[in-house]
Image (cartoon, rainbow, N blue to C red; front, side):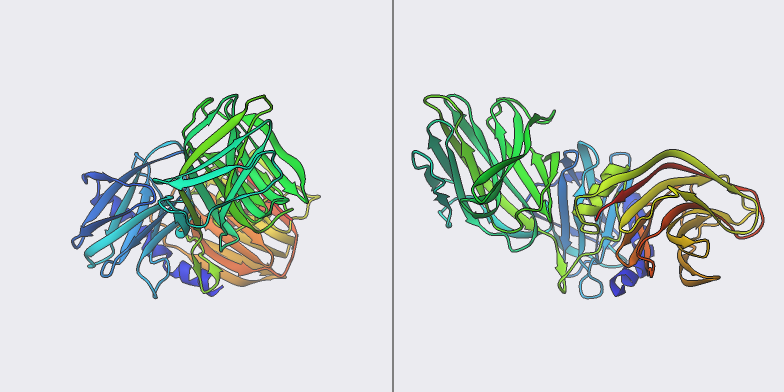
Length: 510
């Protein structure tokens, strides 16, 4: 809870920085960011730099800005100038560096990363854009043999492994024969593993891919791509192979392409798969939980089959950890329901493996009397760990103080947690017990009174978190482990208020 309160105290500063960045960089000439390579610049007081990059839909990227003298601030914007996410002082007051961890690109195309120094700070800075998370666990350009080795899986002929001139070459021959090469064990249970297949060849066809959670030759996961442009994921456990996802295509995969990048994000029991940086699918399986990473090739079921894969630019990244705790995100992109659920998983707020339990495209709640009026949803359902999101709007006037909200962990009319926004730029998170609001987080610093607001309540064990338009508001303790959900009309005085809810959804997990 101390981390939550610290981020809340600095939320106003973050919003202010994002606005200053946009206004000061309209005419700036954008430089080009290079993936997985450090770049540098220098800023005078009040200046900012623009860096452009291209991302694929669903691609995970992390950005770190470090400096000895700058109070670093970074923000990602789309080409319309809309700020998607920003950060300042991710570890204040110990550090004034900026970090955006696990940004999931909402669309394929160009983005702008704006960098500046807060206040009167100035000086040189270093900027790093990484695939996956912000901490490099391992990186190999295969200039030397750094411990990679093949695995005996009982193939009729031994595989060949060669590391030279900046590539790892793995070859196998025979009918439906498999070859594995391993060499690195990630130090974090959550990590992103990626490598570039520079050239793949096979006389009758080929299957190549990534190996992960490898314990031994009888226990591992693999994701494979074939020459027809289809991919599959399998598990080998106690020597028995199980197809978790059979051969399927994706629009991003180019059939017969022999040069491409493959990646996997390992997060608990969830596995996100990437082709040429674009997210192509996910799988949940809890059988194996630890092990090395590596590469796999498989010949096809044909006489004279051979497969050779040349691989380069292997990188493994893991999330930032502060004092043994995951870095808490003070801002989210939080677009549609599926995107938001995936973002919350990748940013380690919720576990993987959830399902959509409720979706209501549009609904209304109306009340004329003063007070908090509840309008229950899914009356027969009790929710424990879940995310509740919705976009809310209403006809607000300067003469009336009213608002709209969402209610979670409702035991009855007197016990619940309420997240809301009002017509005067105020917003809050409150816990009601009997006739009293026992915990209250309130702010009235919304810079712009909007037509619509995005509300997001996250109930995890005994804590409820509240995000408003992607910015963290605060967290409160909840004594109720599960309860109902509801829409809420909040009238500070008697007035006719009609709240409109669009895209209301609930995401749950065990």
